[in-house]
Image (cartoon, rainbow, N blue to C red; front, side):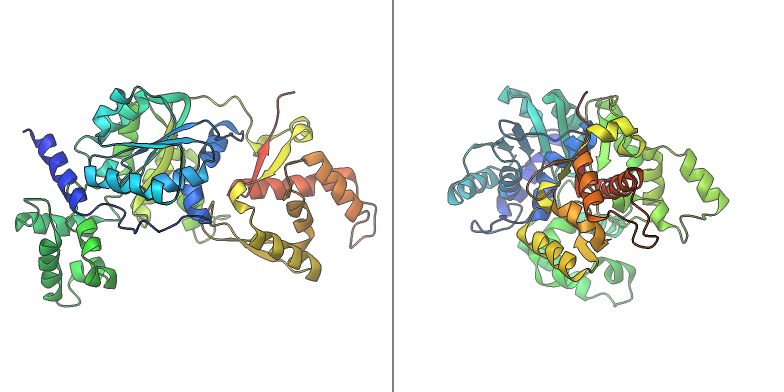
Length: 438
């Protein structure tokens, strides 16, 4: 057995012993908008093609499906899609099948195979979810190439790598426990107990304990196995990831939580940065900016992103739309924003004329404060998409004169306000703007 085969066999044994995620069969994801967002084709497809996609009939691969919780998320987040799950762990696949039966989720199938056997399925996929998997594999570049080979022409892959810089203490710990022989075989609760005992013997100020230990690890063998005794686990830098994408003929689409990777947001004053920073950021490509970000602020455990076949956009970014494009534009609410809770909050803010602090979490973590005067146009999208021209007409009806000058509101002013509001919400993913072909 070669080294790669040995590693894969240890991974298989570890996840047969402790399938991931460690969640009971009755755990549900219904209504979990954050999970829906992470597993939906809608957002990355829009970012790639500036169009909404119909998920019915799409074929989705969960590469490394584990115990099936993510496959359930994929089914809920992509109505009408066919979900195919694969995993090297037979025990995990059994649990995934049982989970689908328990929750009565149709249109799913599961196979106990490795990613290297993908071609044997004879399928092509519109979306591939490879979540918390690829950093365990002996050759992640080969895995990317194999997924690329079964990806539909307009298909999208979501994949994530462990960050070397963010998890450096976990990797130091893993090196220590390998040195002690705790990872010679597939680790179990026995080895986890030894790790816990060793940490308890360290003084509180020792770096590995001070920055690499937590109450969750203290009480949970599973977390120790998933961090300090995780077979095959390796960290990567963006530079390494981009080299692998290029070798696999794949192109970065976007980071999943793209606003959390903005270098400008790390500056004291983004509007007046030091000259050296301004020059560096303006000259750097998006990929280079991500490389800089992880060197300056390595706070994200996962380098989590979407990628696809090389593609040159044939559409204009919203920030560069002409009057003609705005005249054809259709505004949609992001489907995962449409909840009764959000609707009630909007109506309340309109009635009391108070700003609304709306959570962006299904799309981008954090909050947005929206002035009450803009909320009627957000509410107008609740029952379905609207032409932007109709929203401008609505603004003119509600605001025939300027509130301070009492001058008649011009259509140009109404258009500028509505377009600016929609463009800002589109930047955060709350609103999706389409410009149909003429």
